[in-house]
Length: 124
Image (tube, rainbow, N blue to C red):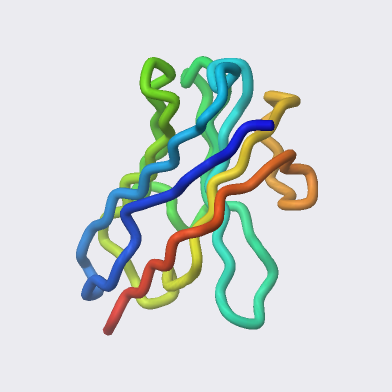
């Protein structure tokens, strides 16, 4: 079972930037898609961005398009989420998840395994 560890969260003012990282421990990272999801207090976990196994295909939720960029480095077993022009409504715990189907699913229940999450707080 792959283990995922996120980092890079923190407190930032509106309009600022953060870069999240998620590193996998196993040897099969390059075989599956990776997604970023987020969960605000009292809300369900929602899709943010997804990238397929070879990094060619990417998918974003509408509210983050043109502000967030997902990328991956298979040699480092790491997926990134560059977040620019952050807004208070982006405040949430951000989770990376592994998708063995490589279908870039957008439903949290279809993710196969998760990291522990990293808090992102955007102040107005």
